[in-house]
Amino acid sequence: MNIDFDKCGGLVPAIIQDADTRQVLMLGYMNREAYEKTVAEGIVTFYSRTRQCLWTKGETSGHFLHVVSIKNDCDNDTLLLRVHPDGPVCHTGTDTCWGEKNESLEQCSEVQSPLLFLSDLQNFIEQRHREMPEGSYTTSLFRDGLNRMAQKVGEEALELVIEACNGTDERMIYEGSDMLYHLIVLLASKGLRIEQMAAELQERHQPGWKKH
Image (cartoon, rainbow, N blue to C red; front, side, top):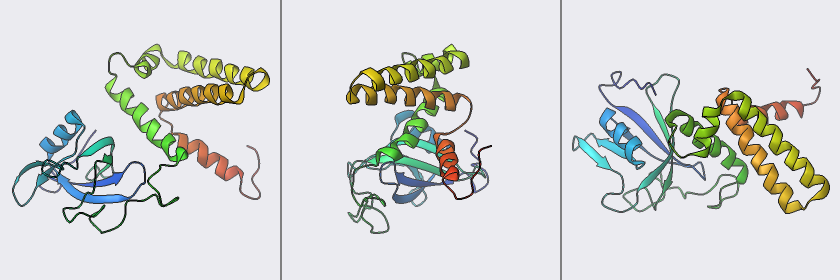
């Protein structure tokens, strides 16, 4: 990831967002060392401008921020970190540094919408693509190449059809989930996102839409 630490004197803003509820929890700053420590450990570490040193969020309170994904903005000078917090984020004891409750905007609950999880799943798959860890099934798919990934989507689609015609609802959901996972892997390999498919369906729902 190309991050422009030099633009603002060695620091970049790091926006912290709950990966499940999508609530913005806090804003901190990172230098290169803090960023690299965050990536290596999977726990958010900031650079304290007042103490002029690294500090891992939660090292005193125990309310660590577990990294789900990290994104750079279009100018390469601001980070968006989606996390799973261990507890309240603010030092005052509130869920966020703005005094808001950390609840889903859609459901006002702490349960993540399964549809929102698809975006997080692709973030995870893309991370696998970048890091290619040994022993990962997703890594093996990327290494097998585009043709094999496309073939797996077809194989899982066939399994879905079989279960739909002659199986149970439970097995149909199971095989459909396999197909969707392999489809997202295929999309990631092409630099595409599952949200683009959702946007295409959304466009088709508009009055006056015509098939290409």
